[in-house]
Image (tube, rainbow, N blue to C red; front, top):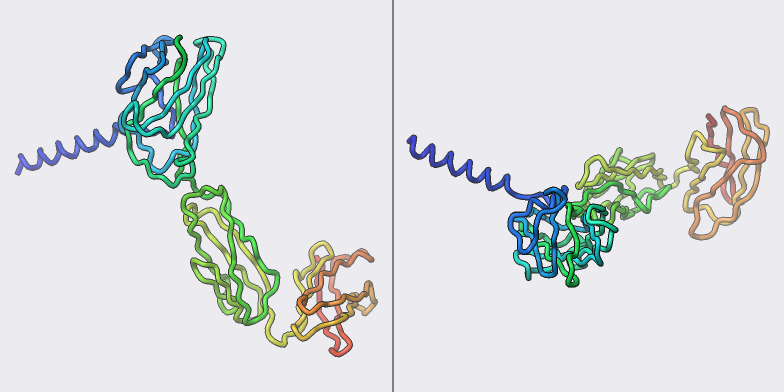
Length: 331
């Protein structure tokens, strides 16, 4: 039993040691920490790789790329015309995934950051590279080319930072359907799955994954969407559902900046007259709005008088409809 226990312990320790030896390319990798090399020497008091000529290379074992990378940066110097760094997988002639062009920095100790340009086939985060041996192969002229201090990549495992519902309605009628659409930022977020929920399913229901909303009863409801990639990233869509044959509805109420939207039942058409009156019946503003066959919403701004905090009444009528009275609040 003891023999088996020690064998298992050795295997576990060996596995842990192997796991610990993987290299994270999304944190800085020091050039001088290479596992194998061809033709180079240490420079800058052992803190960089130098004396690099055309065809030389350094390699790093077990680089845990996962999905990606998207882009990167390399810190390098040159006192000549510089050169190109090729990033290859598995061997000095293996799969090319990225390059970096290093120019003269006016001194071997004058290190600067240069872009690592990931090839288009790998820069959208759709290729899973997993864990690979990475080779930096140096190309250029006949002289010493460059020194390398460190480099790193940007992970393709991009998480959501923002989400927006792009087609939130103001008003729906009972029985209406709408497919809500969302936009996730950044655009290269890997996991774009979202979850929808309704604050009041007696007013509107929503499909959990696809955002299809059904207006089922009069009232106001908020539909929320949450990113699976980052549960802290959410957006909301609040709207009013008007019942069949329901009286005129105004929102927001209380008014915001003396502005309201007035939702009219579908049977309303033609010219609509409105009057805004104070609590004692004094008319403050009046006007008419011409509805077309598709529009059943009036956008009204009361700018003819200064409205103070209190109660107001909006009266709406057409030639063939009775007067509808809406109680408005101003805070």
